[in-house]
Length: 402
Image (cartoon, rainbow, N blue to C red; front, side, top):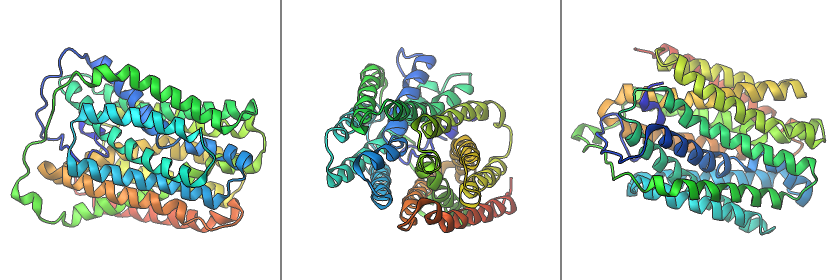
């Protein structure tokens, strides 16, 4: 996959035309490992650890589905605020990544030290802010180091870190369920992992100098244009569609089989296919038109969103896990690549708009779930999300001018 696909939420740096400064003595492979682990902490723990732990928190603390939705939404609001803040204040990438990874570790540990719902909401909000800053900082830093690397496959390994983090969080949740441990211990274990990642990445992240995007031209002050708004809307629909299964798949599985040794494997599987498909995509799909791959991704995700709602059962949950988990990182990468193709020198502004609509979409997803049994509560939101995904797939293909 082309290098520009690794800036999916970097609203502060236009990497398409940036000329990165030398990155010192950090090798491409060390930078890849640091960025992979950093994204595992920022996204797998900071953003998505709540998903595999939600069934355990429901069982141990009588957490309602509505409360779970509010905790998920708090994290998504924080992520939106963090992405916006990173765009407005343009922090130094390495320093931003360092402090954000430390904040994720501290906040995750703090989540395991309290049972107060109001504090959980605050902690998930702040963790979302830190996750966005970490993602932007790590992406900018690793691009500067890998700019001269001849291996484009390294970018796939970088973004495989998101799936690796999900896999780790899922395995920790699985172990806690099988061994009848409190969710508190799972949060503390994940916080310790995040702290270890921060300690390992601290020195390398401080080794690279500041990199800035070139000044924007006057043309960048105008509107996004029809194509830009089209991409932003499609990306927002993607955020709304994928987040419903990404939030509730383990809860779906627990509702079907109340055995943590079974339902606990759903999120590790989600993370595994996400990591594997990110690497495969970087190698195989780079020569295809980004919008074609994007549209196909929407179709696959729509099928994954519909399956548990239309045909309740463990097979449908596994099918959804593979479809959504294996595709959502591909859509992130090719969506960003298409933004660079359409906007050129002004792609940072378009990526900022796409990130905003994506954040709004994934914020609305959990809030669209009404109170009631999960199987019936998700039916109409899932059908609506799938229809929107299919509609935007058609729009992407019809508007494909490449």
